[in-house]
Length: 402
Image (cartoon, rainbow, N blue to C red):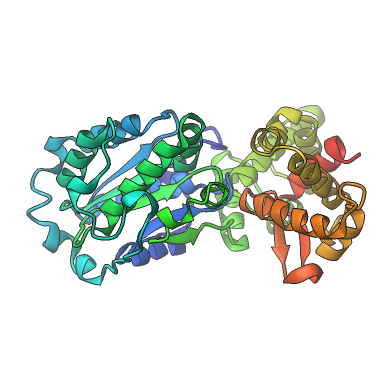
């Protein structure tokens, strides 16, 4: 069975995340949820497993990928297709028994919204948009159903929608929030995406359209979970791996993203296979040398990391783009990162004015942190900024460090 690196992890390919699943169940009792966190952490895989658990509890749950659409009408239609009439029969009548005390614990946030939307909105108050009737029909059909609407790649969809019409984005987000604000709504929304939803909403001053949702930020694997996954996958691939090699892989990669762990392990197995063929060894065991060889092979494959650079080109305009690239270049050169004070000193050429330089650094670091390029430890100018992924750091140093 091939090692999964990028596809949704299902069945025995899904590892750990027990604490995260418990958290989702706890928060969804009283909230709709924004599932945030950098890409390559397994948000889609987590939602898939969450939907499977919901089914065992008698709750209708659908993982709905909206990456491929770019209009509000298509969004409404996609949800409608995920929940056809025949799939919800019997659920509404049993909502109380199935959801237990969920409805009673729901806390309604009554915040006035721009564009005529607010808490407790009447259905007929929705603005006259082409998708109005379909949206209200969907809302009426699902509001009393104990259903989880797990909207994946929501931020990617919103970017496409906004490129067409910011007004339509405002209308859609306003309607969704008004729907969530209705009293005794049985259904729950979980929104997720592979690009930062929070920074996107901030860019267009749309934060208030989701301030009724609880933000749950998914992190990387804990070291024990990472080692357990690596050991299980290596064993499945019929390779021995001892504790020292497991520690070496985790220490080298730094940020314990499931995707990069699996990618690194797959390349380590390839390196071991080649070594075994060359030496004639009959012991399929992974070594530290195999891991180091795999590291060099990964860095030599520029296509695996090029999208990190292209995303900045796509999302940032000048002069912010040049400043962000200069910031990453400076951080990549430092093995253990830099303090913000050190960064400011190194960015004088990028922005001579000290006040503008400080403001620009704050703006850029917000984007880079939200999108998973860097992590920030501490507060203020003494806080230390470093690449989350040591693999990405070494790639950046090699290809964009000059």
